[in-house]
Image (cartoon, rainbow, N blue to C red; front, side):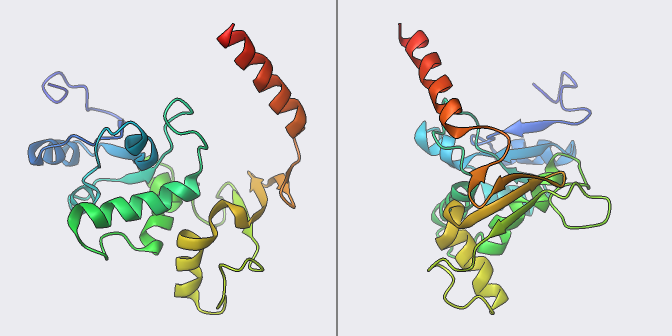
Length: 200
């Protein structure tokens, strides 16, 4: 129906895309529709598991997403990398279906590609300088000199807890684990006020 009504023309990003037939995947590929893969949300809602391997094989641009707090409590993109890899492996009974490097790419450069952006998700001249500093002092990094093992430990073991600093468009927004633009206590107090109003 979406194809017949011309709704797949232009820049389309399909969220979730978990209940796809072979024909559906072919249609998405034919119209260069990208997919935002949100495994944590899909699992919480028991909505299904995306055919990630088939989507990748069809050349569909894929990136990782979290959906919203309504179906993903912590919006942790590090966790989404792990889940994407675990679910892809489980669905296809293939422990190589999505490697740590492949999962990291979905969260960075492939995610930017899914959005049609070449200035995000990469460290390159002219890119936005969105950077994350992960501490290698964490116990997850036993052999930080091995690049393959480093990426594996980053995706499978360290996750968000290893993040020390974050820069967005070159501006530091997290310094030594603390936000630089907001007061966490004020944010929490505000969220609790809103929650009380919603519940009242």
